[in-house]
Amino acid sequence: MPLPIILGVGAAIAGVVGVGSGISGASKMKEANDTMKNAEERHKRNNEKLERCNKTTNEEMDKLGILELNILNGFDKFADMIEQIQNRPKFKDIRIEGVELPKYNKEELQEVSVGAGVLLGGLGGAAAGTAGGFAAAGATTSAVMALGTASTGTAIASLSGAAATNATLAALGGGALSAGGGGMALGSAVLGGATLGVGLLAAGVIFNVTGSKLSDKADEAWAQMKKAEDTINKICSYLDDLKGTAKTYITSLEAVNKAYTDMTGKISYAVYTLHKVDWNDFSEEEKTATQNSILLVGLLRKMCKVSLVKKAETADEMNEVNRTEVDRTIRESGQVIGSLGLQG
Image 1 (cartoon, rainbow, N blue to C red):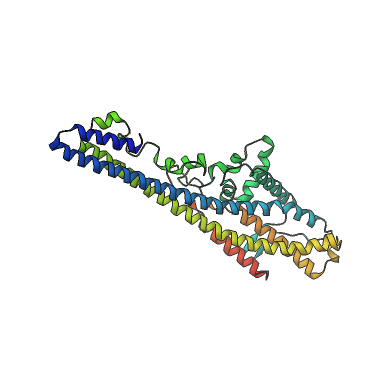
Image 2 (spheres, rainbow, N blue to C red):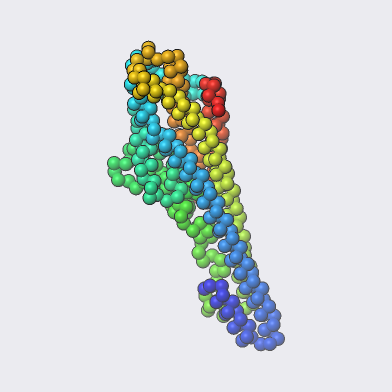
């Protein structure tokens, strides 16, 4: 029953009771109704806060997810270009500044590229947070899995576990949020639609409780609101941490991608404009650019494989931001870029 109706019922009760006891009863009724009203208003503000946190985190994670997918989607063109060069050396596994990078593999690059294209193609009608879900789970892994399932007609939301890490990325673990994504009423997921004021929403109940019992119910509703508030604050803290981590990762990824784009631009000019197709015809600058691009494409693959979220093992636990791996990857990317002299 809406709160105004509850207040109206309270007024009716106050008019029925005797004058002497009615004053005390009406006072308790007013206090109970005030408590209920304050609980409802505060819970509404808490829900609005949660929606804002969810929205801004979704936006940042979607930026990261789309950036990663676009990077991966271009790998087939890179592989095609490298395959034009005859007599090139074999680019093996390389450790640079202590960072291990994967070797050049044409087939793997093409698979990742096609899978990323599948995911990008399905984002048009997808809910907010879907692209961010791929970043949360690791875009490289998501792209490979998408390639394997795309031919079956599997819905985009279920590819690569996106549904399990969508939007708020199942901030409550494997439970309610993972099933609905960011478009759901998050406050209802946390608290439940009829939790506040349970026992007060039916007029028959209200007519049969004393002022003291009504106060007890109002106190119970306030306690439930406070419990929900604690949960919401915990989720918002997690979301803010995730948003900040995504923003930092975007900056690092963009720096590596810029260096990669610069290097591949030089190779493209040599191959497609100067029509050089033999490694022995390449200048030292062009050879260096090719070798650097091989390193950088491996670094980008590695960066896009990082899962930003560590999924909780049980439904009643919070997920965690995968800060250890993210920080290590950012540090390693800086070491690689620095060793190649490609800063700025």
